[in-house]
Length: 460
Image 1: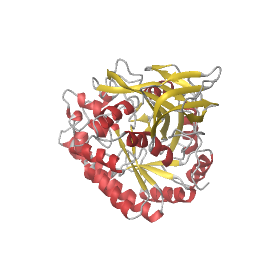
Image 2 (image 1 turned 30 degrees about the vertical axis):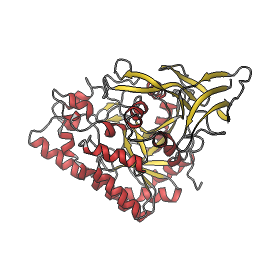
Image 3 (image 1 turned 30 degrees about the horizontal axis):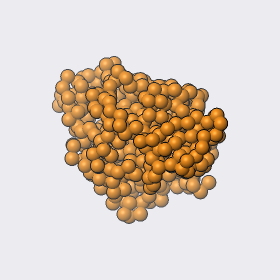
Image 4 (image 1 turned 90 degrees about the vertical axis):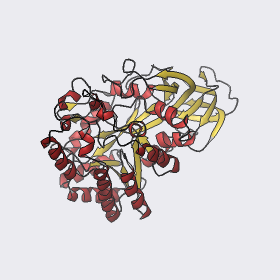
């Protein structure tokens, strides 16, 4: 069935105008004023509302074994939460450990998503070790439609690569035209500081920040930038949290290093005092890199506004507070890392970014959709509103008023890091390739409708 969205104010990364959008065969086929509804078409009146391109979260974890436990979401729950929040495409981190086979890991992640997701999806292929066998498998995975790798400069012995592996991964990426996304922290500094803090009896969640302060993240970024400069690889720093790390990325960019920067909605709105809450409440806010001093928020908002920071993601990692986070009750190093935010990213970014004047609507769309699509070989299929693009559309009601609550969220986790926060505006209709998936906060889509998005490096 065809779809006609009438009278909405279309907003992309560069344009803003009132028009109708006609969709058929999963794509946008016409944009114009006064389009008459063909017989049988579903018509949605978007008068007084914005129409955005479907939003893309470039950094999520759905299936994840971490610190002796498993993330709580599945594609059934996570894709529903994403869509209700206006996110129509996910890029998940496929993260087999050093002990696991790379290709088998990719197949496992695919199995967990194909036929189950209600939204479209792709992967960053984790490289947790690099040898001849891994190289052959990575080449095969790229041919199957994955054009980005993920490396950890942290989590030694689990996901982390050594410097030889890092160099060879970047060299292969340069050869294949693949972008390398990277978690940047110095794993040795983290490990040593953790030992010192625990030996001193400092075990509460607030110590997580002290084990990996800004200098540790900045050193990780500097380390990656040195390797990227020498190999010529294109890189993307995930979850950058502070000025010190951003300064290193900017300096490298000025030297000619190809590097993009992602920050998270959590870093823009939360600070390290949340992780210092008493009675172990701070464990809800433990993630890596950790929440920082509040002064970093203005720097990151300004970075978004000025184009120094390219994207806003979530690093969605859903671990229950009562049972899973409690593993670290007497040892902060055992708290599963993550602040689940997949469902609320867009509403929070609009309410506390656009409505407060920190960023404009075009930056909002660019950072949460368009730039992600351009960076990860999805544009113009995704990330924009134009004829020929997938009909992933978000009709957004700016007049909605509500509050965030764990009681009403779709994410499969027992708390919300933003409990009670006020929201101004939310998606009223969300479509995935022309199929309506959300109406007024309720999921009405189909699990299994989501497709694996094959991506090819630009020179393939």
